[in-house]
Image (cartoon, rainbow, N blue to C red):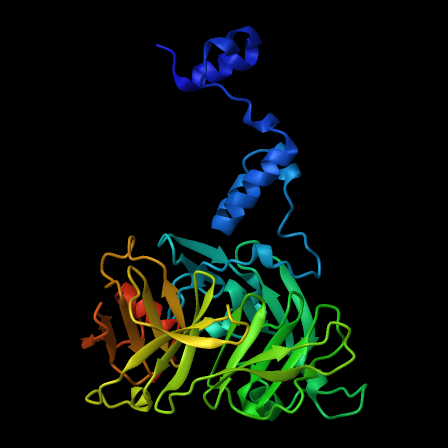
Length: 403
């Protein structure tokens, strides 16, 4: 009996027999425009699927753009938005190997990141620090900031943070340790399709730069501490004093970058903590002030809002039901699981939270259809390494206690 493989070989050698076997298709000879359309649909679903499509055959590879050959350009189409790096102490793969989780499908892959050998740990602990899935690295010798795509291995170099120093051009010599500490990047994102924003809590400064720029430019008049930040649809949003702001840059470069108030949370008893992309809408994850307390007996209250833009003026709409979705939140940001289909141990229509590296429990706020909620707690392992999926996800939005 002929096998499927033998039939394929026979068809290649005997073209006349191809018509006898309906299963045979010359997929490699698809028109280039059709391959491009299929590739776009695959890319909309997942970047890794697009990479695999290009690897299927040479004609398909030639008909699709190479996401690793962009040069100094930033192309948001190829950003791994649905992938996040699993935080492990120490990393399971050694110095340069890291594991990444697809939050839609729960698939885990291992990626070798040789850039970690010459850099500090990437700024990816929280969602605000890995804009659109991209890794933000700071070279510890030169303080050059690098944007790394862990799936395509495309790297974009940005200026050194030394260009923010108040010193004459041409200054050389070792970088003082105080300068290094003050210019640690605490959050990063995109102000537009090509402009990167970095925030340095140590000096209360925010700066922007594009690939090819000689130096970073400070955001005009900014000298405060951010409560949270998030990149949404190629805009950098941040929260200061209960006000949601957005960084605005002049495409022509004639005016300095500035911070513009976008929306205000009128409920004074609520502090805004983090933001997530909820199916193309910006969702705010808020909490009462006692939520940040380390005392377990003080009950938190988490609230969700979506930013409505239909009227032209941003308004906040309360979200009382997540359906099959789940939110994980902490002091470093938040992430949203669109479904618990591949996460049987995770409760749907709930908010998981952990605030502070010394908090030895994770909280679960289950939301009810009538607008009410219930809160329960589960213990975390005493060691730094999490032992459950929920703990792994929380590690990505909260600080890790290393003591």
